[in-house]
Image 1 (cartoon, helix red, strand yellow):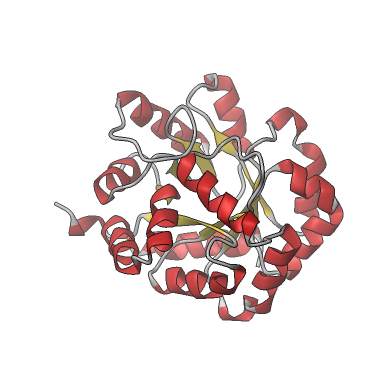
Image 2 (cartoon, rainbow, N blue to C red):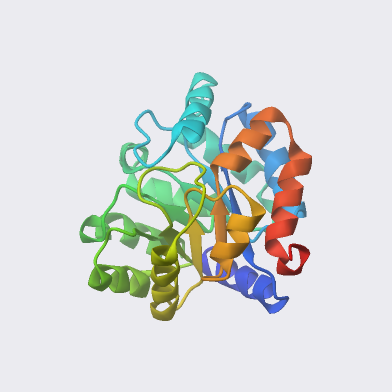
Length: 263
């Protein structure tokens, strides 16, 4: 497990000509007892990795769909330690890389060293912390490095070119390119500005560049994938799981992963 596992898994997928598709799910939405079922279902659908969100009371990067899922998960009593234990229980059944998305407060309260160690024990490969800027990341990046976990950075459209290049150079596992301004949630279209931004990041990153925030249809996902290496889809996956529409999830992954399907 760890960053090497993620990099190797991505290379395997890309060697087949596939776009990388990373779904996001909220841990504890529907109860922690469905986490294993959902992860293994997504693994069987052929995803490149799975991003698992930790519910938090002040999710500043998340739009209404993921906020609602987080609220449901918190009402179910979901905790960071509970998620790590649930993931550890079936780590031997997983081959797909697992990325944990959490805000800094739960990590700080858990204890940095304990968090990194328990992530490694649970078979997690990488961590995203969206509310830590690069100027303040060292205290958590060093702990993750000691356990060979990828610290996945986010790039924003509103950042300067110099800052984006610096973020791209530091990236591990993959670079999370936020393709909209604002929070997560479905958007209608992406302009030339996004194309130039993604192509610039790809030019400066030694790891795959994945576009996220606002991706909801196969057409959008394929458009963005043509500018970088693939996409992260959150709100749509969360809502489809909430409705129990797994067939549509499978179709979205298939249509996005294999570019030949949509003309």
